[in-house]
Image (tube, rainbow, N blue to C red; front, side):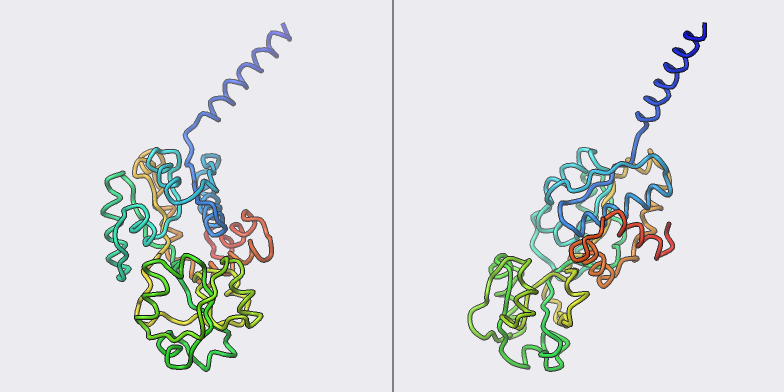
Length: 289
């Protein structure tokens, strides 16, 4: 008799366990680079505090198109995306300069997939022209740098040729270069700048090294670079399954500045801290969790 009771209890436990594991979950996705892994972890932990036991992760999925396919198919419910990337890479539209128009356009277009863009997180990951502060001549903007002198430029291979890259930048600002631009892997840009092999680099505005090196990021005062505001893209259906899902995510809007994102990126790439620890510390520091 005792054996039969024990067997029954095991069967009940198995059924309960299976039922729990079969519950719908909010699936958080991300692309496959450092910033996205951090943001994906921030989103996942924030949702876990609102929906305990109902969140799963599908981080490091791949590039833009793979992640877009995943959310269209319902394989993920939310992921961070950039407005300029959505406009040009997903929607195949020409780059635009006005961030308000770009956000409105992608919001409208993404309705075809029943996807919603939330308000931006507070930063953008666009191109950033950086110089050593000690050698900047006091220049704070690209217009001032163009008047200052000719610059030895270091840039990634893509930036040197793309439509919204170097050719248009030189034309817009009348920026003078000293010699031919040195093209290199993006990971070598700041090393080359520190070693004075170049004196200006075309990096990204949330690069972690910008938070620790004595550099000045020159303000794009003519708004040459297209906007790449980061925001969360969500499936509309998920709100029906998880009431309060969208409101919880909106709590992250406007909470991450460019300076904060640089620091978080450096924590991962420079200090080699785990993404989960970085996300947990960020959420605690902002009082969200």
